[in-house]
Length: 112
Image (cartoon, rainbow, N blue to C red; front, side, top):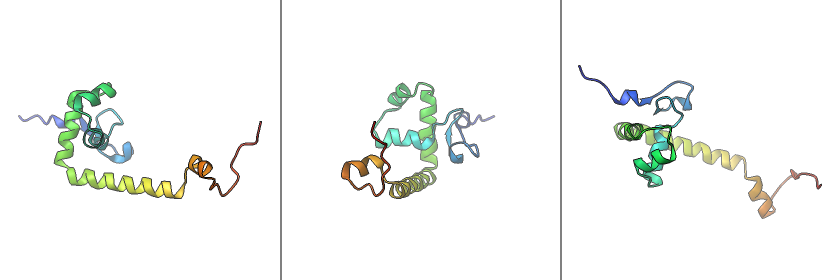
C-alpha cells in the first residue's frame, strides 16, 4: 500500500486562511513559505529557525506542494497582491499623509 506523505503536512480547510493550502495544524500557508524561500532567499533551515513551530518536513512539503500546484499558488498570490494594492490605494497611510502634509481631514488627536 502506498502512503501519501504530503497530506500529513499540507491541508486546506474552508474558512481557515481563506481555504488556501497551509501547513497542517498551523496558519502558515504554502504561499508564505514560497515567499520566504523564493523572494526573501531563506533556506528551509532558516525558515524553521524563524518559525520553530513547524518542522523541516513541513517546509519541504510546502515547497513540494507549490511545485506541484505552481500555477494555482502563483495566481492566488497575484490576486492577494492586487487586493492589498487596492486596499492601500483606498486607505492611504495616515503616517504618510501626516509626513507629506496631505491630510485632507483633521484626524489628529487634540493636544495635551
